[in-house]
Length: 140
Image (cartoon, rainbow, N blue to C red; front, side):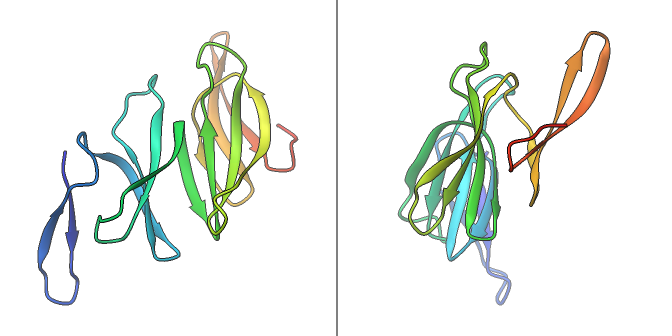
């Protein structure tokens, strides 16, 4: 599953060699490309950064199941152990690459990020609920 870069000015297409397995998601922010490798639902991934042309690939965080670049921060779900309530929502400052804990003891391993919280689905019994974990630590 290769990735390609298209020069919108001249239409030139270049094949990128970001990972051996292809990427699941990528975003550009602050002059850098952020991406994770292709994964399955139960297997956490690795969050990488590179130059937009695919050069200078570096590992940022291992054990990530989802991420979103919002402004100058990367919010990501850190899956410590997908069988236990040890999973965390983390926030990394792009400039310093320092991560801070937003919320821990999460019993699920994936969700989507917005500017105010992480949204995920959680099954309780036979009913599926939408859960919003706000970045201020409260959950609804």
